[in-house]
Amino acid sequence: MNDYDRFVLDGRPVHFERGQSILEAALASGAYIPNLCHHPEFKPHGSCKLCTVKVNGRFGSACTIKAMPGQEVASDTPELNGIRRVLLQMLFVEGNHFCPGCERSGNCNLQALAYDLEMLTPHYQHFFPARELDASHPDVMLDFNRCIMCELCVRASRDFDGKNVFALAGRGTASHVVVNCPSGKLGDTDFALSDKAASVCPVGAILHKRVGFAVPIGERRYDLAPISAQVPTQQAEEA
Amino acid sequence: MLHVAPTPARKKVRIATTSLSGCFGCHMSFLDIDERLIELVDLVEFDRSPLTDIKHCGPCDVALVEGGVCNAENVQVLRELRANAKVLVALGACAVNGGLPAQRNHLDVGDCLTRVYCDRTGGKVPDDPELPLLLDKVYPINEVVRVDYFVPGCPPSGDAIWKYLTDLIFGRIPRLEHPMLHFD
Image 1 (cartoon, rainbow over the protein chains, first blue to last red):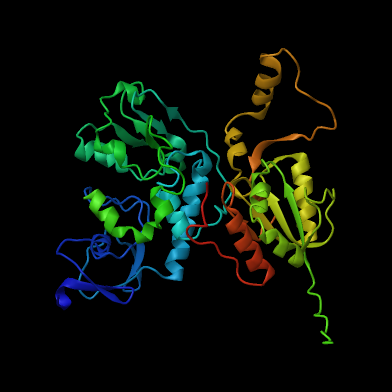
Image 2: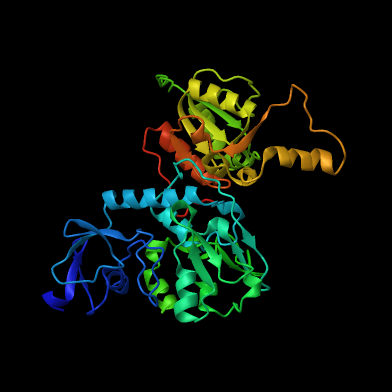
């Protein structure tokens, strides 16, 4: 390791490979930067802004900024964690996130991040939007109440599965994920349980049928350890 | 014979509790602090609460509010607690974000009532003036009054409630961390 292949993250040197983003390099080194829309196999999206860091004093998304020598990156600071908490609160009030009734509870990245950043309340006025449920597919259920529009399913289906099943429609607050077929029903597409898109959802919007609540409370992924303490497991699983 | 000077009695913290649009699960969880209840009676006394059956709240130090706000009576009770309590705590998922009762929020309340009382049985929607008026939506309590602290969980565990309450009583900044902080 020399000065040309490392940057400084929260005062500690982090090694990077040429072409890696700050987030990729940090995760590879075992350091956690909160993120929701990042996936190591897909092109960076930079939409959730949870990975916002300060690079040499300027705000930026760690998933889209390439790691470079000489960078001084601040991530785990009260200021940035406060901003991230606000982003999470806005995500929570924008959808219908009722954790007690959600199959994904305990295995949900949004929830785990909220725990990690000690978000005790969504704070803002709730939207309580009316959103669709789609149970037309034999193996997968869609619950758009919990969708955070990270576009992981859109990217997985388009870039990885080559099926282009999902798309984002509408603009601004009217943005929503739709199923790309005339009826708009997942059951009328060639979507399959084995698709990458079926297992990339970080929240409980794309659910596998007949497996809900299989793992008892206390043994679920984020019951065991906070999301920030699971970086190596996360890396191994996603690779 | 040894003379032991009586220790000055510590002023007890006065606590009011209520369940608005909740299932009393958070109150049951409160009782889950088990034998620590004995420790608690030395530290606190209860004002309005299902435990005392006092109907109206007087001046108190802490108000623990379970449940969201779903009808006019809830609003009245919540405002009375806010007016009397120095510190108001939202206890549990329903108080924090409306919880499961808030799942009716994308439905029209008039439609709900007609479906339940009229369509199936041919009856009419109950209109006894004693019945509190339903609100259009179930609201988290912080959308109705100012809330000082939030304890999420459905319900928060006895340990979490104990930790939060003792932090408050002893003047520490209340804090919940993994694994006590959970939303379900």
